[in-house]
Image 1: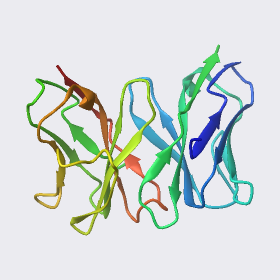
Image 2 (image 1 turned 90 degrees about the horizontal axis):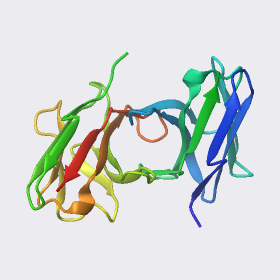
Image 3 (image 1 turned 60 degrees about the vertical axis):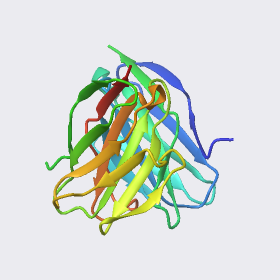
Image 4 (image 1 turned 180 degrees about the vertical axis):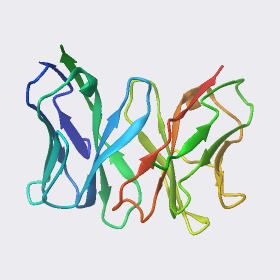
Length: 109
Length: 114
């Protein structure tokens, strides 16, 4: 079983829809990262969470430490949000990030 | 906004050749990383570097791999004798205070071993 599981693997939605991507993990962590990977391959950090909730523009990330679960939400989705969204976790005392397989999001105009 | 820069963006090399991938991390960051992503697969950790030494490495990071911070600004990954299975995108990353801080990634270096 992978340490980090994401769902769905692929998601296609219409412009304007509310998007939710889920991440579950099986180990104790010090931090969870949400990342965006562009079609060209570059990776951009969206959020680093250790508890609670963070918001940046139309993006919201939440984490439930007890349930070992995090969600990334996108409100009023736009075609430019089309990308692969990746969840990655850092175990306590480790520098290594363990990555999920990513969710490929496609927003149709 | 400060960024991590990587060179080259793409390199094609013959099997058995040595390759050096270069990175310039963000200047006030203390933690440096190399990750790789084989085409179609998830990103994998290779190595972390702090205080001028390796702090953690994965089982992928065997004797064929080495890292160096030669001059206080560059951070390099060397693959001594490349294999076909080393073909991947290699990402350099840096962070001010480690994995509990935002980690900034470079655009990646595509390595193709033929």
